[in-house]
Length: 260
Image (cartoon, rainbow, N blue to C red; front, top):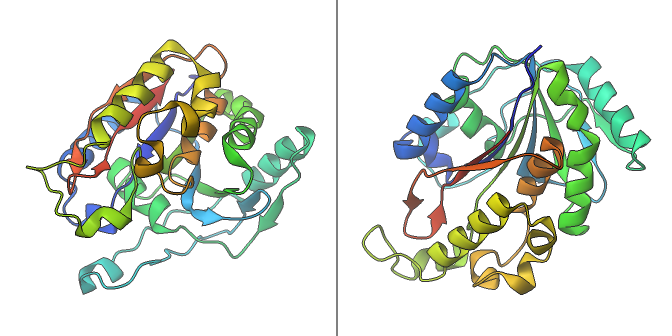
């Protein structure tokens, strides 16, 4: 069985589902380049918990966890099957790593999961297991979660972290646009790429102190933390490839990373 890469996807606004622009093209190209996965495990920035939780639903519901968007968005569904047996296996992997997890048979797929998955695998025929992130425990914890899942790559499971390379919604009213990008976005993008390509995990774990504009790029951690799940699951010798998918609204960097 082919050893799959892991992915980090910047999922952007829920509107990405209706007007996907560059990210839709890049994700379609990426899916075409990969062996068909047996299942997907996705850590979304929009499922937050104090300890690891694993979705074990037979048929995860589509969660419309947003307000004030066009009615067409609320009509979208992603009816991928769940994988309860895989969820149990993941729970055991996490427990074996000293990270006891809770299985949640009711958890569906929030927009951090279904928005990018609709662009990657629009037929919704690949089983999906969502996992939570723990914003109170920081990047090193998420890296450990990813490392506990590394063996899944050899089982045909695609591990995805879904967040955003930059995510500061406080700046939505600041007048930024395609023509006037927020000044912290590109320096932060470039720093992240430099450290990932160099394999400088220690600097990445300390990104809030070391990276330029960290507090502006991420007032809170949750949208960058899924990156560490993907990085950990890729293994210590993984090579990072940045896929540029543009910058939405002048402030949401839509970078995708593939770790082989």
